[in-house]
Image (cartoon, rainbow, N blue to C red):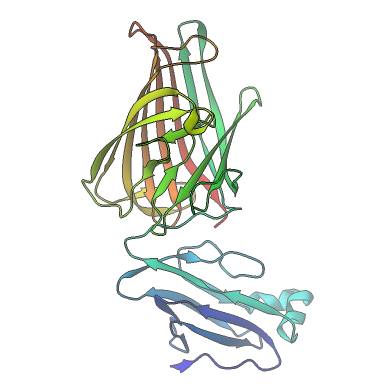
Amino acid sequence: MVALSMALSACRIEVTVPEGGEVATRSGHYVCAAEANCTVQVEDTNFNETFVATPSAGYQFIGWKTGFARLCGGRLSACTIDTSWFASYDNMMALLTSDDAVAYLEPDFIPSDYIRTFKAGDIVVYSGTYSAWSRSEQPRSSKVTVRQEYLPGTRTYLDKTVLKLRTTATFADTGEKQVVEQHVWQEDNGSLFELTDDYGNDYVTGAASEKGLLSIPVPLLAFYGTVINYYTMYGGSLSGPITEGTRSINVSEPEMAVVPLAEYRVYPVTQRDSYEYLYTYVDNKSGSRIIIDRDMWISPAKGSVKEVEVRRGYARTGTLETEVRWELVAAKINF
């Protein structure tokens, strides 16, 4: 076993290892310790090494970092680099002898009780089904693709890094697109808070200045449960409340979830939102109630990889008026 050496005149891999673990090859030929920058020289078609990221005690590996010329970006598995197939391609052979050909490999380690913090540019695409029932319309069902994209936020709150979460649902039966935006932030440990609801109204959980509704609690502890009372406000703290509701959150024991992308270790998280309209500008919804049951399977590395949501609307008399059901699994993740 040797430490990764300084590069010579050849293609090379720059390995950067942050605090929280090390990178080594299964062959034992190369090792790069925590908080080190190392270089692997790749000279010919005989190079075949598998790089493994091993977290230190108290840390977890949440994938290889993504970006330009980064190897194995987004993967949670070991990263194998095999140049044997280069011989069939002139352009790949040219890379082996180029001083300018550089690729990068960097693991992402976070404390073991954290979850990943989303960044602007992160995208998750789900596939699944949608069904809707209403007293006033024919039932509808469709296959659906749902794209969730994190964008720079256009709202601010205290010193939080607020992101805009844009959700675009595309329905296979009609091609129709439905776009919803809300603002969210995460604490350093990954706890996710919703600053606004799907309509842009502020969530308020205490005094009018205390904003944000907990969505994903961290650490994810089995059997954790909480109930939060909240209002939604239009126009900030000077407006009256639009809705009054409660959100219950419960976390179950970790399990394995298989989705089209991969198999992930996940924590099942259930949410129930139950809120009543106090005032609306249109449709006279006052007194009507919405109940949303949402099951999420949360991977510390990738966020929610599977979701089932049922949204029911009740008239002020208590009569069920609408029911919408989404069943989604992650099909593509860019981080």
